[in-house]
Length: 201
Image (cartoon, rainbow, N blue to C red):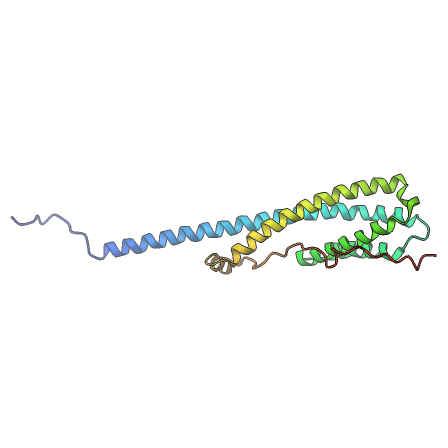
């Protein structure tokens, strides 16, 4: 009995082609998944950074009022206040996250010295205006600390993802930044602030 001439046979090349197509589809799905992960982390990092900027802007908006209140105190150590004002100006002029982080760290240091210096001026601490500003500043500092911690967590995850193989290939091809700068403790922040009152009159 001979086979029917109408029956079609499967070409021998079709199976290998099907395997290759299947591999390409899986590879494409993996690339899409990796790309989407990077996009999500990048956007989360941008949102977290925006939250930091909002809180820092709130802090910087308080500085002119702090400046006026402190300057009203006779013989106050002006150099400490000047450092804070310069840091505020540096933040306003900063263009990149790295520059803003440097300005923010400079302000952290300056504000710390300013508040320690204020302790030597009980008449300043006793004013209602300064107490109100200090309360606002404390609340802002708590929000900044939370925002920075959240940002660092997301930025660390992003940095690890773009450096990890094989997602680093996708990151390089898609043009994702290789690194998000982290907030770190200001150098010397673990040491007590030294205040020099020898120049006061």
